[in-house]
Length: 207
Image (cartoon, rainbow, N blue to C red; front, top):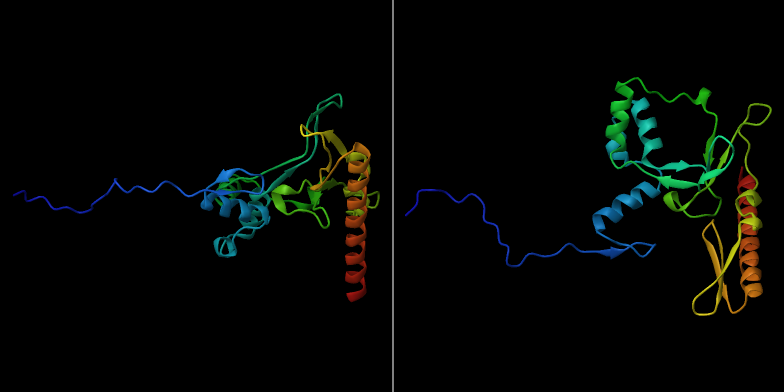
C-alpha cells in the first residue's frame, strides 16, 4: 500500500461544457463574459472595487472602462473609421499603473467631450455624440435632433424581398416597399424625438 496521500480528486468523466447564452447581438457568450459586458455598458465601475481608490485612479479608471471613439479622419479629411466603442477589461489596474507613470485627468485641458444619446441605448451600444466648447468656452447641450438626424437613415433591400430602414441610434423598421420602410423609420424617429423633448420639459418643470 502506498504511503502517498491523496490531496485532491479530479473527475473528468462528467465534465460539463461551459454554459452559453445569447447576447443582444446574437453572439454566444458565457454568463461571466456577459456580466462583464453589462457592467461595462453602464459606463461605471463596480462601487465596491473603486470605493477605496485614489480619486485620480478612480476618475481615469471610469474613463477607461468604456471608451467612445469619434469618427476618425486622416490628414486630408478622408474618413478612416466610423464612431465606435471599446473597453479595457482591467481598467482599474491600467489606471493605477498610468497614474503611477504620471498620467492625470485634467478637465481644463479637455478639448472634446462625449454625450450619450437621449433616450438611446446604454453604454457600448450607444455611439452618442462628441461635442466641443462654444465661443464662450462652455459645453453646449446638443439638440435632440442632432442625435436623430434623418440624413443618417439607411434603407436596404433584404434577401426575402422586404426593405429595412435603419438608423445608427438603434432604430429599425421593415416593410414591403422602400417607401414604406423609410416612412416607418421617420415616424419612429419623430416619436423618439417627441418623447425625449417631453421628458426634458418634465425635468425642467420639476427643477
